[in-house]
Length: 354
Ligand SMILES: Cc1cc2nc3c(=O)[nH]c(=O)nc-3n(C[C@H](O)[C@H](O)[C@H](O)COP(=O)(O)OP(=O)(O)OC[C@H]3O[C@@H](n4cnc5c(N)ncnc54)[C@H](O)[C@@H]3O)c2cc1C
Image (cartoon, rainbow, N blue to C red; front, side, top):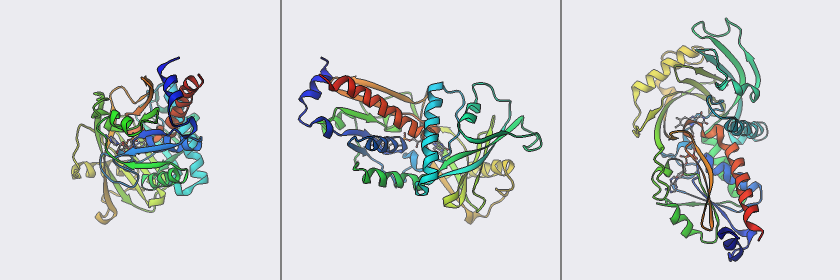
């Protein structure tokens, strides 16, 4: 019998009432909380920033957020993204208040796609079609049209907060300096999920040096032409992400490693407008009126080598880690939540029967 078995056996709180503790209330922590609650678990979410907050270090408040197939990822990670798409698709169809919408997308590629590119996404999105020459600008090698999902974080995060609360989940606003501090707060719990994003760089007993901040700054342009996504795939990192429910489009993007500035950089903003205009002049004019523009700044929780998703047994406790999602946290969110549920159930099965 392992240490974990013993502690579960002797815990004063019976199995069915023991809460799972999640550190972090971003899209990863909240999607996971919802998934666990839907499967009968008790859940407490502890976080410094909660849905509705607008701190630049709370990445989930600022995402675009589109589902775009990532290139250069493993088959397992493709599956996580695909599962996320399945969840978001249902929300778009069944729960408009979730802020998830199905939109038309056009993607222009500077180079023919390799096997390892985002081409795999064509098995997941709806109505994928290769564009004929003449349907995409002449300076590109090829183009795709399809339908994909966009999530408006200004609606989705409050929606998740409401859902989690309605399902019996609890939020505690608190900054902790270590996971140890969290264990002390919940001595009756055996399973802790670290979904603290960039927080994992500084938590004293995690100190993951691979984590780094990556600043994003987008332009929000208010327009009624807000149902079509554009994505430039290649040398330039340019996108136009529609937000039908907020009547506008998000123009991006930039990735600025280790830049923490909360100030709008107007050179970046002007450059993003110019790039978006070149990509879709029918949506973004060269010089949009100032009163139609606002600016979005957020720090992505990036990690060298990609995100961390694993399970550790530390004495009597199981620690699941899910952080470092950089620019893809929304596209991975619900797949990660399901993966954590599976990992959690496996750990329980291994430890609960004595
Ligand atoms: C401009 C921009 C555009 C983006 N566009 C997209 C997109 O189109 N598609 C996409 O998929 N993704 C996009 N992203 C990325 C996405 O926003 C992130 O990957 C995602 O939000 C990360 O979620 P998270 O839950 O891991 O972290 P976060 O949202 O940063 O949440 C971390 C949580 O942990 C808590 N926490 C951390 N440390 C502590 C501590 N010590 N004590 C207590 N609480 C703590 C925080 O308070 C917070 O609640 C974009 C990001 C930006 C900035």
